[in-house]
Image (cartoon, rainbow, N blue to C red; front, top):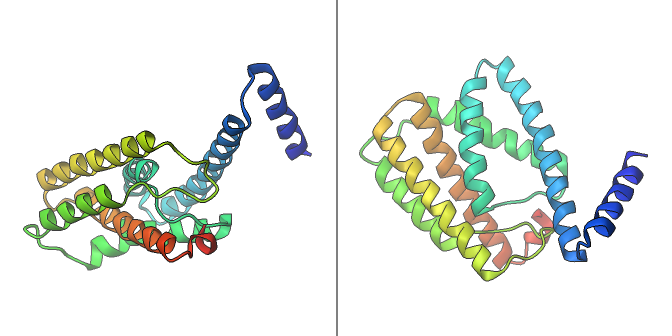
Length: 195
């Protein structure tokens, strides 16, 4: 029932504002993505609250969202696989890796520089379902993602070995790794299975 009302609402928007079919496709994609992300973030917030790591989780989400919206990465076809992947990603970056894998401070700038370079060369990687972007738009996303990584890297280096710096470090490393996986999946023709 709600789907029928949503479709009628979108049809009214298209006729009222004279949106093209491509613009409507982009609008539908955006609405679906935003609603999915809100539900996922709410569920994960409840979990991390119960684990006693809500503030760390929220900082990690802010860093991840700003990078991922510009660099892209792996995209799962179904909500449950996306939720489970995000759960594993956030558990690793907020709790597990900062607690059990200590990276020497002197090595972090080297790893962060590699992440910046990889993101500059690989980003953006869009979902198969996302409407195609123009080359200039892709360049803008890539440059924004690279600039954000540089900014976060400087902050991490300034904060040294604080828990927040460690969380942000692991968010950047894991995001870069999954960006590489997304590029490999696209080149190998496997992105249809993942996305």
